Amino acid sequence: MFGIGGGELFFIIMVVLMLFGSDRIPEIARTLGKGMKQLKNATNEIKSEINKSADMNDIKRTFTDLGSDVNRTGGNITTDINQEINKVKEDIEDASGPIKRIR
Image (tube, rainbow, N blue to C red; front, top):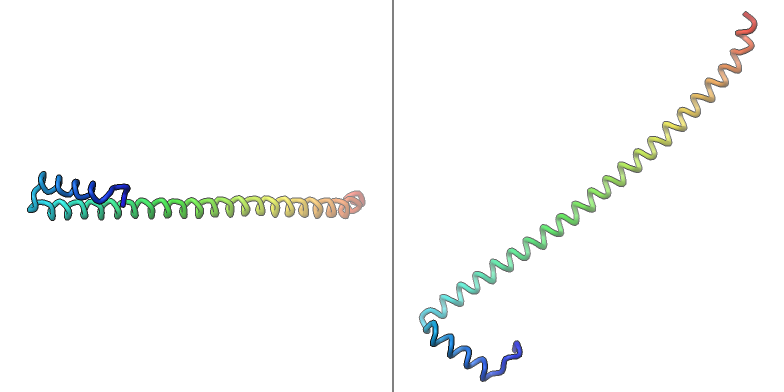
């Protein structure tokens, strides 16, 4: 366990008992347990924030791509409509050319 032998573990327990006494060891264990729990909760919150941030970046990227596609498509449609309008103008000028000369 953790690279510590049985004799070494026993020695550490004895030193802790002598330093803190048997009355304070449960209190120290509770405090360490609460600290570990808070650390675990903080770690989980950080992980969830990172995941949310990654999801938001994906959503933003999707909207940006969608917006550029819409702009590109809108530009193509505008170009096509302008070409058709110019063709109709040319046809009208071709048809009205002889009529204008007759007057």
